[in-house]
Length: 107
Image (cartoon, rainbow, N blue to C red):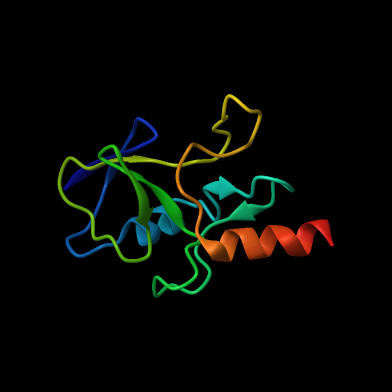
């Protein structure tokens, strides 16, 4: 099965999650927090923490640890994305867990 991550072609296994593929290809993080620019990737691995958000086939807010890959999927990581306001992520709705993490960064 063939999938694309940030435009780069990869072979994936049936049943493999997006997070498993990213980890297998050496990526430990694929987005950063808004304020501190701290790296985020898989943390809980069960969809609770929302640290592993990315975009799959144009759909934002996909949890990489839960989403099984399908042939032809196009995955976009959020690392380095810029908002018009100068933030460091795309315009996705951020979960409360991310906001709480950033409150720790400011404190």
